[in-house]
Amino acid sequence: MSIHKSLKLKNTLVRQRSVLSRWERIEKLKEEDRWQEGDSVLGLPKVRTKFKVRSRKKAKQEEAEAAAAEAADGDAAAE
Image (cartoon, rainbow, N blue to C red; front, side, top):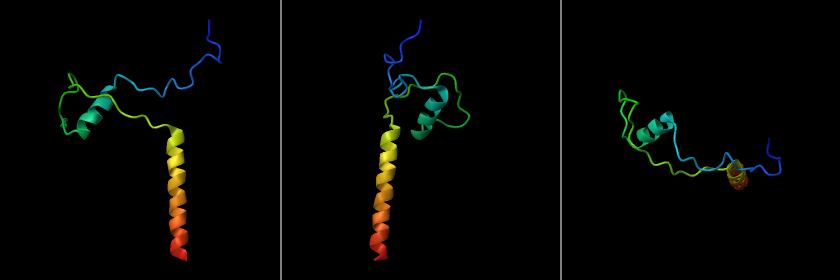
């Protein structure tokens, strides 16, 4: 039996994940300088998983604001 479309949650993929994949853990370790090439990928140390997930709406809104600011700077420079 399936769930009615009005009962489905819209933000199911936006929530914070509690487990990182192996390559994500390695990337975090590289950022913290805790990983060197040649280290074993098995038995990786723990990595904090809390990070902010940016929504696409906010990212688009910030890009639009940045473009508007650049356009305003360009107009001021042209005068």
